Length: 76
Image (cartoon, rainbow, N blue to C red; front, side, top):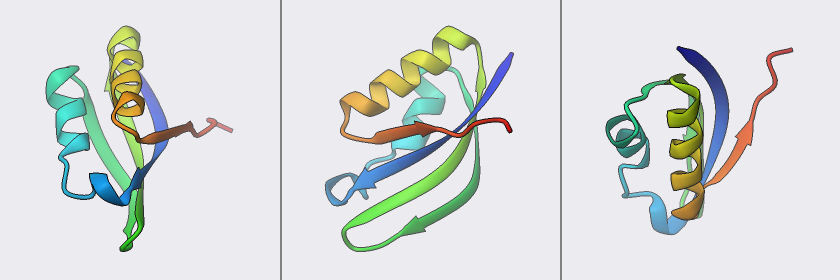
């Protein structure tokens, strides 16, 4: 199992979508939220994804296709 920490930035139109839940369910990933903030026009969350490398990559690609900005946080 691999762990990867990312920041997801959501546009306003995705605030009511269960993006994190769907990543976990559809791609068999464990998600852990470390920080989050939500305003009227955007939201962001620092999220750890745990699972197989190919599932993490597929989950990230899916989130990007939905309009979520995904930035990897370095391990340093």
